Every structure is written in structure tokens, then in C-alpha cells.
Image (cartoon, rainbow, N blue to C red; front, side, top):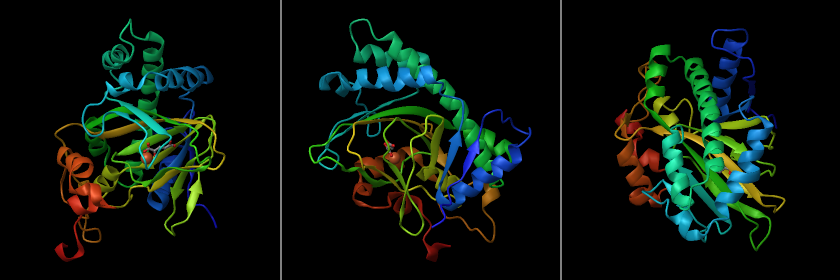
Length: 314
Ligand SMILES: O=C(O)CCC(=O)C(=O)O
Ligand SMILES: [Fe+2]
């Protein structure tokens, strides 16, 4: 089977410069075909990568449970501890990671006796670099799909960015599924895998594609809100984490979500007679409540139930 996932190389690539248009078309085509694109980049130099995965993440997950739990605030924020469905998984999301003051507050909460400046510096540097990468790739995807530059700019300004650091311990049952198939409640998720493989993307025929961890490459995957803004041209990527080798694993994600209070709707450029609206305007706060604390918890596709336009309504 031919994999439809494509790769772009951001190194030295600037808007309007040599190679930009071709890479933009590749990014958009890959997203439309498989809801993901592989991105080779220079945003995570070896020292920063080592500081993140060799020091910051292990220090964070080695903290006592109470310290990690102090971060919990709201349905999608803070610490997620091991659950029966994912016994070896823990994850921490820090909000507003592009604001170094907010990162320091997280550090002070986690390490009440003097904070952890090295941890905060690492997280802030990672956030700054990933912000540039995500904005560039987001621009390429949307412009490649035909969205005007001005509309892309206002869309990017309506987003919040956060980091999720995840740790997959070695489960008692050894190798197996570490995170079941799901869609992210994001616009875009940049997934940085450390040394150990695990990320798998579902293709349209239902088969799974393993994304190998490569130090200079990230996977950029579509979240549910990208499906809304692209009027369904880019469906949310169904993905999972499996543990073929059963080894301890770390990953970092840099994700974008609409700012609080935003209502997300399809770009005008992507709605026409051939592409009638697939989604009603989606109040993001309402959707988060529905998906994580309301009736959406029981559904396999909560987005569709919340704001999908069913065929009869078209
Ligand atoms: O760890 C990974 O590679 C991906 C994790 C993931 O999909 C998630 O946290 O939503
Ligand atoms: Fe995910």
C-alpha cells in the first residue's frame, strides 16, 4: 500500500521564497489525504532536545503525585494521571506556554521551594520554537487549501498555544496499546516523539501507519477544530499510541486551540455550492464542556454531534 503521508522540509524555507509554493501544495495535499504531514525542521537543536527529554520531562514526571495534581484546572488543563484505560500514561498540559511568566508560575507550583528555572527555560525555548513552526505550517496548509492571507492571519491570531508533555511508563502487561484511538480537540497538534516509537495514524481504509521517531522531524496532525475551519476538507486525524517494543516513552506536543470565548466557523473561501457548510458555528467553550464533561463523553464523534450539519439540513 502506498502511504499518502507527505514530508515537507522547513529548513531555509521562507514565505514567497524558493520552494515555498511547492511545499505549501504538498502540506495541503497531505492534510487533505491523511490529516497529517511530516515536517523536517531545525526548531529543536540537539541541546534543547536533550534538555527537554533528558531532563525537563523526567524531572516533571518524577515529582510526587500531589505536586502534579496541583496543576489541575478545568477539563483539558493540568495533569492527567494513569487511568484504567491507560494505566501507564501520564501527561501534563501547561497553558499559555508562549508566555514565560505563565511558565514560571507552573514551575513555582510544581517546585514550591524556589521553582525550577532550568525547567522553565527549556519549556519556554521549546514553546517559542514550536510556535514559529506551527504558525508556518498552519499558514501553508490553509493557504494551500485556498484561504486568503488576511483570513489566515486573523485565524492565527484567534488561537492559544500550549504544550503537553507525556510519559508512557512500562505497563505491567508489557507491549500493547498505550493510548486508544482518538481525535485531538485542537486546531493543529505538533507531535514530537522522543527515541521510542509509538505514534500511529489511521488511514482512510482503516489501516494504521506508524510514524517513526526521527530527531529532526515532527508529525503535524489535524485536530477537530481544523475540520471545522476547513469545512471538512481536512478531517480530524484519528491516531493512537501503541508500544511495540514495550519501552518507556516520552513525547511532547505543541497544540493550538481557539482562545476562550471564540466561536469557530468554516472559512468563507472554503464554502461554496459544491462545498456546502459541513459545520455550524462552534462555540469552543461550549464544545469543551460537551466533549469532556457532558453528553459528548459517550460519543465516538462528539464534534459531529455538537456542530456537524447532517445531510437533511443541507
Ligand atoms: O505521545 C504521542 O505520540 C501522541 C499522544 C497523543 O496523541 C495525545 O496526547 O493526544
Ligand atoms: Fe492525540
